[in-house]
Amino acid sequence: MTTLDDNLKALERHLEHFRASGVLNRIAGKDVPGAGGVFTNTSPVDKSLICEVAHGTTEDIDAAATAASKAFGAWRDMLAVERRKILIKVAEGIEARATEIALCECWDTGQAFKFMSKAALRGAENFRYFADQVVQARDGLHLKSPTLMNVTSRVPMGPIGVITPWNTPFMLSTWKIAPALAAGCTVVHKPAEASPLTARLLVEIAEEAGLPPGVLNTVNGFGEGAGKALCEHSLIKAIAFVGESRTGSLITKQGADTLKRNHLELGGKNPVIVFDDADLERALDAVIFMIYSINGERCTSSSRLLIQDSVREEFEARLVGRINRIRVGHPLDPKTEIGPLISEEHFNKVTSYFDIAKTDGATIAAGGAAGDPSGYFVKPTLFTHADNRMRIAQEEIFGPVLTSIAFSSEAEALEIANDIPYGLTAYLWTNDLTRALQFTDKLEAGMIWVNSENVRHLPTPFGGVKASGIGRDGGDWSFEFYMEQKHVGFATGSHKITRLGAS
Ligand code: NAD
Image 1 (cartoon, rainbow, N blue to C red):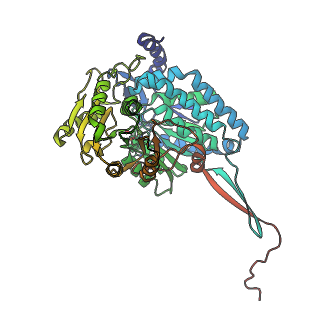
Image 2 (image 1 turned 180 degrees about the vertical axis):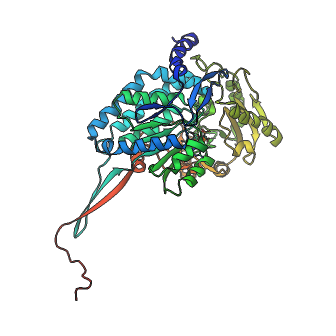
Image 3 (image 1 turned 90 degrees about the vertical axis):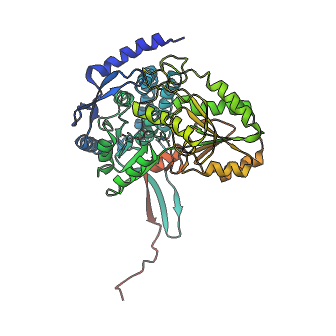
């Protein structure tokens, strides 16, 4: 069994790599310092310096977009089976370095090793899954008309900009980059400034696996600099973005002049609705898992508990008991369930809701305080006696903080569930089949699980409605974004062509 000590020693070895040279940009297969100098990257665990990071600017984005554009033709035209082989090797490379990826991710983001070790492997799964779709990705339809043999096919869009956030950054990057590469696109990746380490590991692994230079380029930097420049660059054909809803709106504005295609995966304030006829034991486990795992820094977290009033008191009492036993601690301790939040800024945002909850008249039934001040630790928190108009019920807090709201009837539960600007996921707990069918039909969410926590299945569509996003990932939906449809009509005979100027 691995211990905290083992993990700390292994981490030290892996960090040497970054301490020696910092995190450099990778453009056209070469290490490139940032045109804007460097910025520093610190660990949320103890606030210590990890390393310097290349500060990419418009100049770096231009170099990376040019490299991606030059590499596009050869990558697009490579035989699909050859591209597939490289992507499978990337998956194998990720698996071989999964512990290194997980340890670096934990140190960089504060996420617990317990969850990040699995997230690294899910990154490999993303590459394997899309590698297996490569051969048929370009297939189309044959749509015969009386005079034409109409044929459709799909072609890759071109160079794609991928902009990712700091929560589970490695897994989320592969989620975008793997299908883009499988489609035959090249990529410029701008990782979140708060979590640059594993994006660097990914490009190293990909190149070692045989990905040609320029097919995947990584430019570090800030949203308003490198991120904005990527959206505005004319060689970049589309932006695959994961982040906050208000940033999603900026992405759309910034890409307007160059008519960018945008895929936006944005915020959420997702309801978990528990009826009194549900298996309450399993519902309790799922409610706790979906808000307190991954530090609650998870777009799909069930941050609003809608609990039927007949079982509210008992359910909340049991929740409090379990929440108070959740292990908050060093993220590299394999027993830790919650680590520190990503940054001081985010810590301040999350903890500010403790006062907001009190002012609004809710009860802090568990937590409601910071943890060990050597890092950005927060105690898992439960707000009760809340109503859906309170800020703690309407705003995405993005931490280990759950707001519990009581309801009495099915109609009231539905009204509360939908009374929110977001619509990413919803979770429903009931053993009444008719209710489940009717309720899921009316819930405003892109993804709904009934009697289950969020279990991702890659062929299914992932994405939100309302302020939670535009577009879907997964299965063929990913290729629909990264590829263009092309139609060609072949005349099957000598059909009559209307003649002008011939009489
Ligand atoms: P963020 O929007 O602040 O940043 C995300 C990325 O966008 C970063 O790389 C950042 O540098 C970049 N960026 C910021 N401003 C930009 C601009 N003007 N132009 C271009 N790029 C810009 O988000 P965050 O705080 O890093 O991540 C947390 C958010 O992400 C939460 O709202 C969460 O719900 C959301 N998220 C959504 C999903 C989903 O699938 N729907 C998944 C994970 C996270």
